[in-house]
View (tube, rainbow, N blue to C red):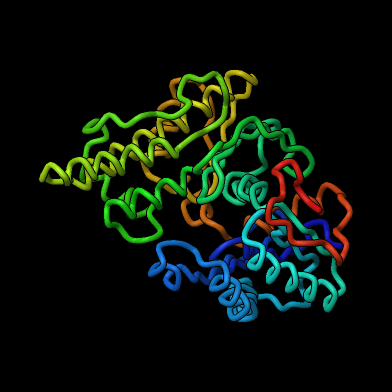
Amino acid sequence: MRDEPVVLGIETSCDETGIGIVRGHTMLANAIASSVEQHARFGGVVPEVASRAHLEAMTPTVELALGRAGLRLADVDAIAVTAGPGLSGALLVGVAAAKAYSLGLGVPLYGVNHLAAHVAVDQLEHGALPKPCIALLVSGGHSSLLLVPDVARDVVSLGSTVDDAAGEAFDKVARVLGLPFPGGPHIDRAAREGSGAAIAFPRGKYDDGTLDFSFSGLKTAVARWVEAREKEGGRVHVPDVAASFQEAVVDVLTRKALRACAKYDVQDLLIGGGVAANSRLRAMAQERCDAAGVRLRVPSPGLCTDNGAMVAALGSDLVAAGIAPSRLDIPADSSMPITTVHV
């Protein structure tokens, strides 16, 4: 294998078929086929719909990525695939495709952790990760704080959500406010016209001494506030509600992240996952990191959401670290723990 092998990454953990191609830490292509519009009318992702969409999109998206990279399948040196966590059926499509490409091309296969890939992708923009760093991962299904001594070998869980993840809360609050699915971008957009100080929504587990998160109570508080306002015949100013809810979420996320940096004496914070595209989270994180003397790394919004480049990036790290490839009988593990970087 070449010193900087070409790795093709496959991501199908939820509703986006992502194919990425990297050489070392250089991104050559990142193609995405999203089925989000097919789920919008249901107000959330329907697993069976997502699985069928992955089946239909897999081959065309691989071909699109290869075309953008100016490569042929024969130029690929290794295949990396999200083996978990995620929706079982969706994961199976990606894992099965990865096995077929690996076997057909005669190249090694690396089954990787979706969450660790969200950490690894930042290297495609900002270079090798500091060792160690703290990672705050915020997505539709996960809100996690990690200590990352080495993303290819060692990821330590420091805290996670005990109920709704931040992304789930965004989706549910958007539904209460009559905003489309997925809720994150629409709440972010509406909040720009409102005040984050308009309504004092609660901050779950704000001063509990742990690094865990809870957003279920906040979601319920927003729903009850809107219900009470409507019952009184008052006007619900959506931008103020969205901004106040968003402020509560990002306040907790950034407070806990900086607390983790201080507790473990780490000077580098990485934020990843779909919610990392939120403009207020990025701004508050930068303000608080600057005040604390912590260096902040956040990928561009296009690399925060699920994509194949992040999977390829982690696969490239595994190859570079000399870690043995996965077996061709690896399973899709919907509940894969973050401490399992590869299988």
